[in-house]
Amino acid sequence: MNLDITNDITFRKLGIFMAFMEKGNIARAAEALNLSGVSVHRALHTLEENVRCPLFAHKGRSLIPLPAAWTLLEYCQEVTQLMERGLDEARKTAGVGQGRLRLGTLYSLTLETVPRLIMGMKLRRPDLEMGLTMGSNETLLHMLEEGSLDAILISISESEIDRNNLEVLPLFHDDIFLAAPASATLETNTLADLRDYRTQKFVSLAEGFATYAGFQEAFHIAGFEPEIVTRVNDIFSMLSLVQAGVGFTLMPGRMKKVYEGSVQMLRLAEPYQMQQLIAIVFSRNRERDPNLLALAAEGRMYARSLQENITPAS
Image (cartoon, rainbow, N blue to C red; front, top):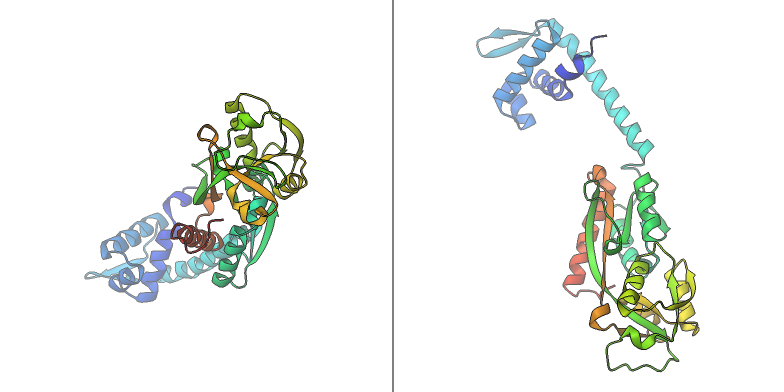
């Protein structure tokens, strides 16, 4: 089989050919396609060369379709319709552009950020169904890479992001605080020096979660290994343990308004201060997916609202 056809006859040339056959002349075809007349003429000329038989008769500057051109047109219409169906089926198989968006998120972002984004998405795309998966940074990135999630909301500060393959849309920065039980006696007028809490017990998120790496780094700077009573797999469980007096921890500021009555939060001293950058992440090869375009647009609006202090920072 001669496979040169895949190099010589392109869908672009066939599209220009069909537009010419529909409009009847080069000028109208060029206008419909937003191309120059020279580009249309060149595409038709090279298509005729590639087909290797006459398609047009020349009458002055006009091209008159021959019977071979009308025959080719029938098959062009069939093949483009078939390819459109093939592309639709391929997108369905990949879960792209369908009526469902699979979104992954950190547990802590379900308090405000995720609900705001979902509400905005429902206004933009009322028929869109959104599936929500919660997990650690590490787990969500893995699920995105294997294709079981369409987009994720994570802290990119603690993640190695492949910027060649992944699109990143920053939403906001969030400070990390020392969190203690309400019953603990603390010096609240000064910044928290972790060295002063050497004798305290701590609770922590498990490895792979957004706050875990920062937790480890902060105590490395403080010069001691904290006594960790237990590690848990979601931030709500961790803060419930802090509420119950099991231990201290480090937590992002976005949790403050939910726990401010039962958990004390102290800003860290300068050597230990850190921020998380929360962002929407999705595959770069899907950046034209209508659902992801809508999510990105909603994310930009949300980020702008935080910068303008329209809503409290999450």
